[in-house]
Amino acid sequence: MLKEKMIEALNKQINEEFYSSYLYLSMSAYFDNIGLKGFANWMRIQAMEERDHAMKLFDYLLSQGAEVKLMEIKEPQHKWDGVKDTIGEALKHEQHITQCINNLVDIAEELKDRATNNLLQWYIDEQVEEEENAREILDKLELIGDSKQALFMLDKDLAQRVYTPITTNE
Ligand code: OFO
Image (cartoon, rainbow, N blue to C red; front, side, top):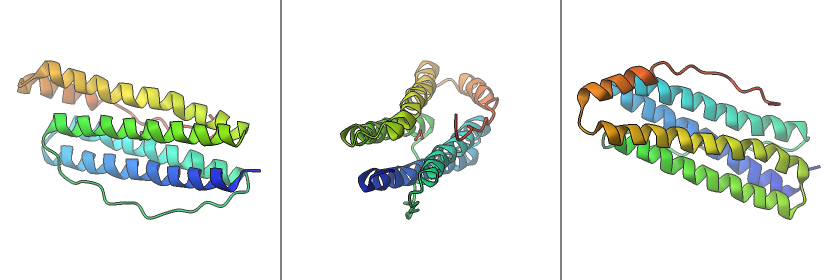
């Protein structure tokens, strides 16, 4: 049975994940509006993955007979200062989420909650990937500099990303 402190913290994380989804959907719309359909596609899929991250926690709470408390999702930013700024903000956001997951692990350890700790290991691995993905795009943007042609090529590349749903018991 989950302890109240853990339930509360996991509910907060559900909200963080839904906010991540909202933020990336907003970034997707921004990219679409400035003509970068590939970046828009990449961010839209990112938003879908964030929803999956939220649902994995949602399903875990329900499987433990715990109460799910959905909270208000704060309004994300709508505009950024170009491509590099947007991806830089996405990376910063992922670093914040990594910190949130680390804090959750601390709580699970404090409560000797092995089942939750086990679930959170999936998120730890996922965060390594999430930060790496954003950093990789940012590095490419650094290399590209002011080349419109190279940006167009990267946009084409990001258009290839496809959504793969996670299974909730993965
Ligand atoms: Fe859910 O990993 Fe990004 O925020």
